[in-house]
Image (cartoon, rainbow, N blue to C red):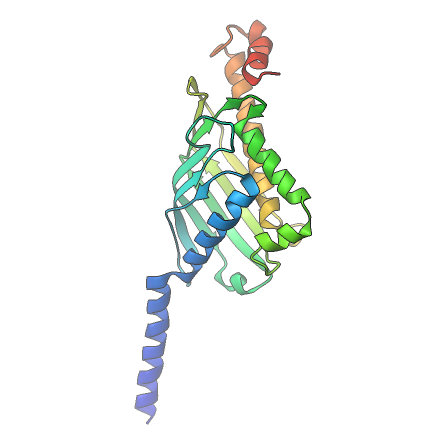
Length: 234
């Protein structure tokens, strides 16, 4: 009898392991959340090809991340990344606050486009802020109806390839954010998105200003201010 029980236990453990390896429920959950709530917050297309996260150590990757542009912009996308590395605390999935140790976006392709009323990242940031200001109802919905919040210990974008308006490339310094939601005991997905987009948008503006200042466009440093004003339409 004991041997039979042992065999059953082994089979049960093997079955659970196989389920997590083959079906990747954590990955599917992340994919569903990104593709459902991402477009609501940014008012742009957001999709991923696949998400694979190990249930044992929480390490995995998001493949084929695509962030489109809001209406009014002509370029095909705002940001694309082949692979996004992610490390989370598996046990926290069942809790009110999900702890993500690290998110790494390496060598993404970014298109920074100037539209009639500002840039595409200005518009995305504005849309997320409007979403936040719409009230707690959407915030609860964006958390999957569970009231879950997020803590991200480290969020990094490095080696980004940025093009401005299809005209010239920008040199974007690496972006690092640490302890998102840590002090407040967790942040909603919209608050996290706002923090990331705001930082990325600020760095893009600085990169454009630097490009103008060194004469990549608009001539010498003396005329950098006018060159930048013309680029941004301000």
